[in-house]
Length: 291
Ligand code: 3HC
Image 1 (cartoon, rainbow, N blue to C red):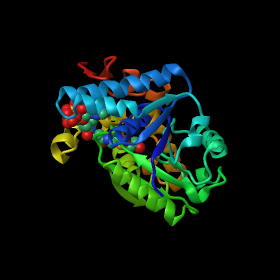
Image 2: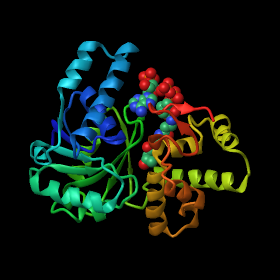
Image 3: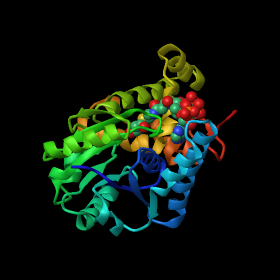
């Protein structure tokens, strides 16, 4: 099946990143948010990123304008009726995703494929909320989407071979390298990442090292671009806490249990870079501030 029209639900960090990637790869993208304020914020972010690529000489102005012409912002759910392929990238919450997928299932063409960018929620469980579990798949991108080369694909129990084949083709057309995972909690990447971040938070709690010691350890000793505490702030401490819950519930392994300090920061409203405070402090444009 050839994909021409994409519909991306959610214009936050991930949704806007997916839309930016797709329009620069030549796809027509309808990007949906629930209200104009959130929609405009997502569109502004895409414009800023494309302008910065033009300034760096990585994209010319005509390519930027052509890409933006392929972007169709909307608050309409019904606009998904035109799509060949839908990528859901809303908040990491099963109930919210379930509600959205039920509604999308009602308006999408019968042959359209529904994909979720979930990082942890079982694909089979979400697919079962629709009447097209064979045309449902996990398509997990990494932040920042335009930069990170990986996409993790997960088949649910009923996902067809044809759906997987189409999604593999789409991933490559988006210049991503796909890997496939079984439908186990956290799939492959978060199965590795969550215990790593949790261990760093426990090390900080125990006073094994300072925040900066721990992050420098990973940056300089393991050659990671970000230390685990900085990365947790980048992912969002609220999102990380939610993912811990799904993994712990699914695998009953204490490595995935949320460390108390993580829960405390989230309780205090410190979600990391997006709220200006987490393990570090950030300015309004997301740049890290000195302590
Ligand atoms: N959106 C788009 N592009 C971005 C970006 C963003 N939010 N942030 C940075 N970039 C681009 C820059 O424009 C720059 O592009 P260029 O090379 O074409 O000029 C490039 O990324 C490098 O940016 P900078 O030079 O400003 O900064 P750094 O060299 O410090 O890189 C980083 C920033 C790419 C974010 C790097 O620190 C990094 O790779 N961090 C780790 C990211 C990571 O691990 N992500 C996965 C998180 S886990 C996840 O997403 C899964 C979820 O389920 C939890």
